[in-house]
Length: 187
Image 1 (cartoon, rainbow, N blue to C red):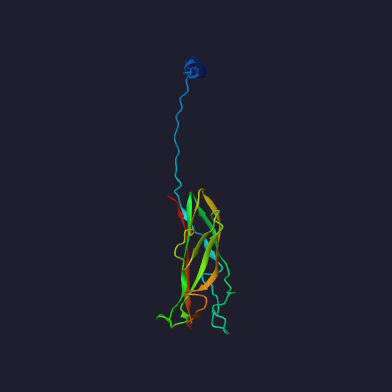
Image 2 (image 1 turned 90 degrees about the vertical axis):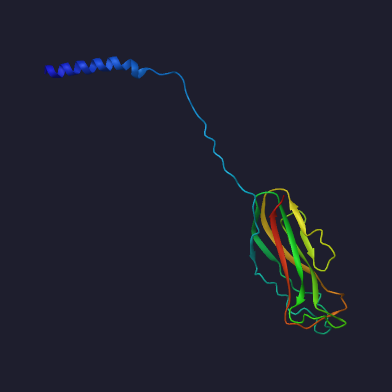
């Protein structure tokens, strides 16, 4: 029993002696700041084409006159989910419908070209418009001043026979043109 008493007395004494050291504080606080950074690059995604990658206009001429039809069915196509993370430019370019097999110079009174207007709308306040066969296309590129996301609708209209409306089209199983819509980060 004496051994336990001596041990208790020694333990109590050491706790009393250490207590002031344990209770002491410095009275100051120290902190540090770690900066967290990241980047988001300027980028654009032109969307996913819906409605198919081909616009089939069917028979281009009125079979009773041989002249270009005025009621060509041109269904719209949509680029869904397009976005740009910064200021951007939308541009549209098109090539005329040209014969793919009858590539020589057409005889007098005939043409192998169909011109049209291609429009990309829904991105910028003013639609981007390109007309094949035109001397210039100043509205083919349009700016958007902020980051944006939207669907872009592509339409074709104003079909005209290259060389004049009085010309007939040369027979060919395939007239082909193309429309390209480009969405890019603006400088």
